[in-house]
Amino acid sequence: MLKMLAPNFLYNAAKDLIKFGLGFRKHQFTPEEKLSLRDKWKPIFETWLLDRRKANYRSDVIIRDVRRFDKYPDSNPEEKGISSWFRLGLMDTYHGGILVGLRWERLIQISDETYRVAKFEEYADGNDPGIKVILAGRIPYHLIQSVDFEGDEYYGFPHIFCHFSMKGEPYESVEFHEKRQIEDFSKPYFVQIGEYKKVRKESLKAGVKHV
Picture 1 (spheres, rainbow, N blue to C red):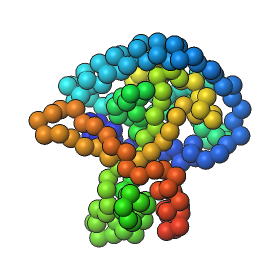
Picture 2 (picture 1 turned 90 degrees about the vertical axis):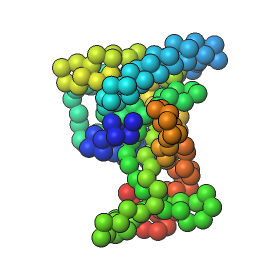
Picture 3 (picture 1 turned 45 degrees about the vertical axis):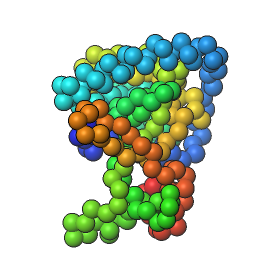
Picture 4 (picture 1 turned 180 degrees about the vertical axis):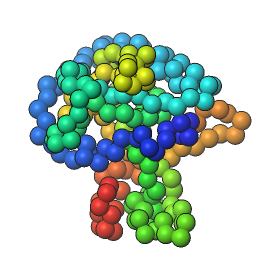
């Protein structure tokens, strides 16, 4: 499915992974509410992804902030913090929600379970260094308020309305993942590679600034 997640539309979430002064109201969910929302959304997203794979269609989605839904389709490049809406690739589901792709990277392994992002100069002379990964965010099912699968006149992709209540964003975590495929099995799966905080620390030490 990764070929459907074309790099030209993956949202560069670098500014979203830093601390920002965005005020927000934290939503509290009971275990029963979380379970109910998981049971509601899990089969819907899994069916949608399966249909897209079978048709070899791209899996673009628009992530929108419920609290700021009326800001769409306007955008303010001067706005601080995470945008009220952005376009990503829906990669897969996991036990607690959906996995969305933020951007592509290459990781260089330093030692066992220790990685850093490849430097630009390491791509010189057509080199393809390290492990190809995608920086992906996990959005819990219980933070999804509603989905418009038909889209609109601006973007004909599913619009996923989320509560940006995880420190002002919709992700419970953001990590690097590698796509893997079992032979004769059409569904790819994604394996976490390293930890974002550790990768970022090692990358900054090595002089990589765009992590």
